[in-house]
Image 1 (cartoon, rainbow, N blue to C red):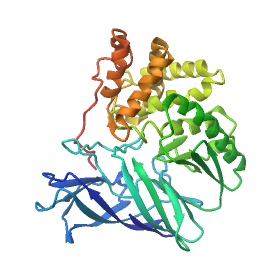
Image 2 (cartoon, rainbow, N blue to C red):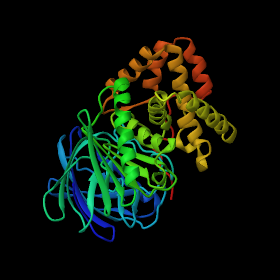
Image 3 (cartoon, rainbow, N blue to C red):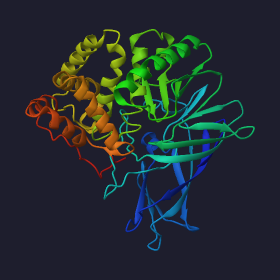
Image 4 (cartoon, rainbow, N blue to C red):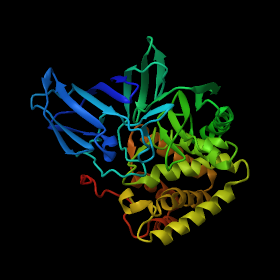
Length: 429
């Protein structure tokens, strides 16, 4: 991918995809996620083998590229795109231009997953909308003077304002440009940890680094080695979210960095670190089954608080939030898709808290050795793939036996535990 970003927040780029297994596939579908909030991302041209390919917009967030019948099974596709970062924090504010940060989440056309048919979902102003296969990225970047890129990958400066970024096995490529920021670098074992905070947030940067170094040995001891060679933690202005995860990169809402010694600041850091396993390495359908990665991240991040004797406090908090969610949205369950949380009603209480409670009950029933072996087995089996709730619940059922049915009824009700609807539909605009 070649990308040029301007001071105004406008950007232009071209992405080349090397794709295998195209035999019998007549079209490719790409997601333009920023267009949920308006026409912010545009694909101007698609070509392959030197020929232009027809484009069709199903709706603002879905682009169809028609493939010629003579295209070989393995081919390269070139897309030319452009866009502009808004000056306001739309949604969570993860596609925005602010005074000291340009947050470029999902700024390029992302190939939808193919599972015998294209996996498409509506987009929502909350939750995580991306569902994508892991891929390797090579990015050539030009930035405005005074801005420094922090990205999902290894950054190497190649010129005055130019950079090359490499990243392997990325569920998506996130790019953040910063200025007037302070950076800190340290290591835990073979993982490089880098933190970036605006000037004046020095204590928050040091605290975030310390938390990461405390959490990584706890998480790796239970889950296995860290999935990536490094991780970046960046404080940025967000809206309605404490933090947001990307492969090898974590965004922290800088509002919470004003007091970095709270439990919630620590929870943001550790929760998003846990997402490097659950979402980054083991992919999930974050729209149809948002509980799977969020519950796993919530529960495994609680290991940080368990060593401080605070796990039972977390369990009580989850119980309160879960009960409140059931009152707010009695028709939903832990296994509900995003479309069942209109207005976000009960979303966090079910998906985060309820899912974590389920895992806590499973751990209490099976004991640590079996429980964490299930998590490691799940990780190994679905590494760099997209796992389903059925896949994970099947592992639990094998160990829990008759107890599984009671737990499934308590947390999923009579809803099917393998959400598939409304796959193939998109939200009208």
